[in-house]
Length: 358
Image (cartoon, rainbow, N blue to C red; front, side, top):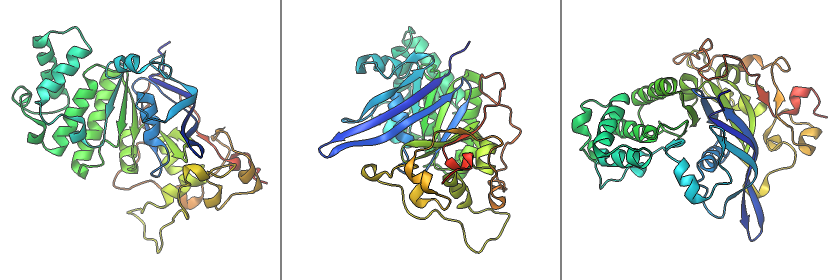
């Protein structure tokens, strides 16, 4: 049986301070199959990027993983030393970050950077690495790859620089790619090209992708499944069509309801009152309960686990609309993951799923 590209189980990340421990991630569990794109969404501070950094082994001190497991392509990585993790990054897991200028060294040509990365993770000589670098630039759609190989990062446009970063991430042929806001700094037309490129490469290479973004349009166009995070916890996970058009958790419904629909006129947009709680002030029970219009006494006492969502709750009529008429959801999109085409049931961490919030 092919192992999952990523398996995260019960991940907890804490930051010790003089006034106690701050829990940035609490009991996060998710998985990504080979060839699958999992979108991770939520407000700023929800823990999306922190989850990606934990998977990459790039947590800033004094942050540390205090419980849980991370397995990449079947290999447990959360207990590896920094030297051991350095061998995993690039070869087994790659990364694409928001600003390509921070990922590329301005003093070296893109060809030199690609060749060094390729030689670090393979047995190719310099000539073979250069040929591989040219092939990578062609794969990501950069015209005149042979000539552009000797150009420097500042000689590329923003979209082309991001393509170079994607080529760098794929240089070691990793089984997993962490893409943290890869399209945020790009205009809409370039965003579409980058998301199409991610999907094509994901399908061709069979790599799993964790796509961290605020942009629901990118999620709708690119991802196979979606995980919604709030206050360091996964509150809902399911297929794109299920989560974006039939959200189960009140927080997800609020996110969807706050996005204007181009095909309908409303006097006032829905909004989520309040703000994300600080790490030193996360409420007991469900972390969303102070902002939730449906919260009951149980929500304030007990933290709900992820509960199977299928057939247990109904989305409100106003929230079953399609996400965006200009970017229709691929409801019939076949699964890209290596799970044999099985549809995994959606999960939501909400006592409303049980019908008992008292």
